[in-house]
Image 1 (cartoon, rainbow, N blue to C red):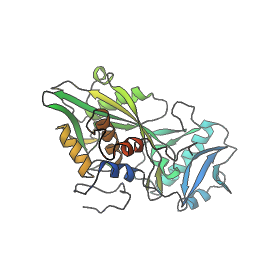
Image 2: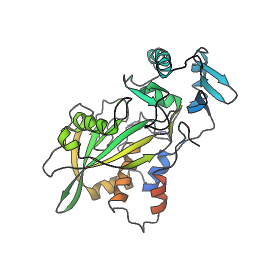
Image 3: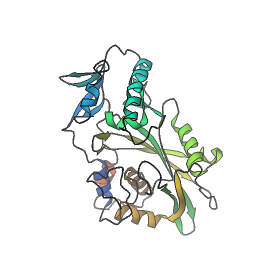
Image 4: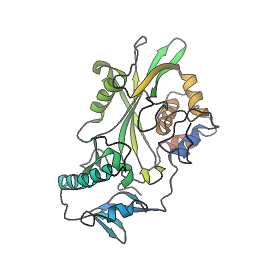
Length: 308
């Protein structure tokens, strides 16, 4: 088993017990140090953060990236979203050939502080954390009501995945690409990841969002995850459709609560999605000693584009 760094590096495979608490997971997802980072701008808009160890890579392309007193900025001659996207992607493909990214995804994320606002450009998903750009995603908890209480469908990530192999996950989760609506993405991911057909997936309820700012070495993830609940019929079985998960199991909710509370077996941000579910369904009571800190901590304002 590979060891973990203090920030839970993505190369780790965690299957061991560790004394934790709900609040510990929130603190872990917000573990970051901005001291070695400088802001990165497109025009007057701060769009992300660049680590000092990644800065020399940008300095190789002064036609694209300009170092200024306030930080790094994208060259002003790239005046349109499409021009920025195309120029930066060509540079990123060179970095991919040098081995900078764990895997090239061929999936572009919008570069914006607000998913509902026009993007300043789009960027390959694998590169986004190296620029400290806010990424968006959808995370869905699929649950079943039985006489003995709630149960949750819990997948285990494939051990061949390039990120967080073998860890437990939310029922369905995926990054939010450009030019796709949130519910559209939920429906797509439900079918791809858990074999949930569209007629069921459309019943998913948007129930909020969580935010955090998580650092892993040079990578910064000031992300927003849109949260959905989906009540599934008793007897319906989630199954992997795209190989992203090696298995699905239906767990009594008390077992999920205990696994989140007591271990780091779930992928780091999945814990926050489940903690949010526990709060909303009364599984973490209002008289819990950390209740207010938990509720407030799930929606900390991340250091993302346009953030403070």
